[in-house]
Length: 179
Image (cartoon, rainbow, N blue to C red; front, side, top):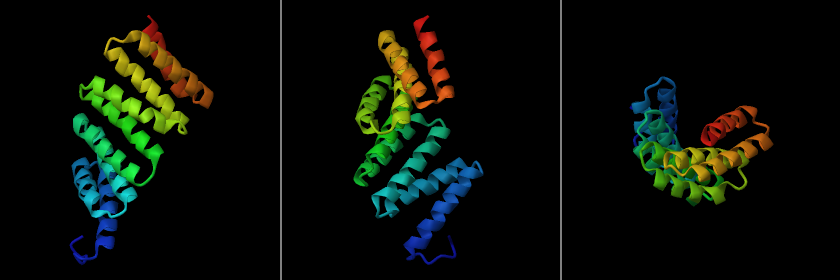
């Protein structure tokens, strides 16, 4: 980075993106997070900013900084919306919901999940994952009948997709909820 012209934004952002990814692969999550976060405002295209925010959120998630990850996923969702990518926006809202749950904000997690649901209609795996996640959130809120319904939904959807591993996981959750 030090060798690049400070005014050469295209090359600087390309190198910083590569460095952020390399740092992540080297388990320097703080370094990767710093680079991804710094890139977000530098990008003029919403899709590029969305991908940087998405990457920053995933790093925060790996670091178990759940409240921060939830906000970063929300930021990424906003950029994906600006880029016209509703499926990606839905995925970010789904991930935000789970981060909110892990941050102890399960009611807000349900709201975020419901925001994601219509955006994931063309994303069957993501929709099934949302149902599974919501079953866990509802169970944590002692809303067992709703949790059972969502777990059944997840099981049916994963089975229809032919994803036997995910279906088995949903089946285990359902069995646990029904005991």
